[in-house]
Length: 323
Image (cartoon, rainbow, N blue to C red; front, side, top):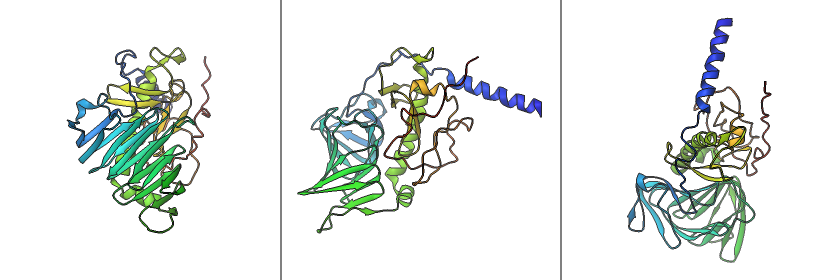
């Protein structure tokens, strides 16, 4: 029994050591991202006359006045730091303004998902569709469907402006825009839709990969208990092994609306083994990342993301005693 425990402890130490090794030199790739930067593409997609493929990731930019269109494919675009726009198949979106304090897009057709992991009072993030415009107010997950004339909030809060009317839509509610009568948000079954909606499931998978890239990237910037060379604060950071940008917060940790955890460099060193995803329930408090449960437990499903990231800058994970 003692030998078995010793072997288990040794295995744990080896895994911790392996996960603690930086994946690449911190100064090996200094790519930068601005609102509109392409972060992933699959299938058929284009910006104007430019056909998008894997070589365009991290370099192609959706600039003001340009249209990103998909056929049988999907695309992920970075907006302000911590905000991802994901475009479904047979969809098109036009960039109106790519500014950090004024970020506006217009969904002309199809469906788009906004994952908002961080937002500040100075940010003004809006996405329009025929007949309406959505103004994002809080962190969360937003679905804009131009084909079915709907705006849906899985988590978070947004104001929808339609003509002279403004409707506030909160988590678990959607708004039908073609009713012909008074606009009113209605509740919907988030769990059922999460299991059936293709763009939701694809976005959840993308969030998983970005969480894994976050842990890998955050370790690169750990140096002597502080931030390593190349760290410039919260923002987008390129990971060459994952072939895209991920988001690193300033400190603490937070969960994405899909339940995947994101760490800052200072916190990730205290949690060498983490669960990247937590159980799928849309009405419960978010637990802290667990220790010793394996790296990204794929046996569990996604979890409700709250519009308030209580874990950010309030991590219950204490630094282990030294010596």
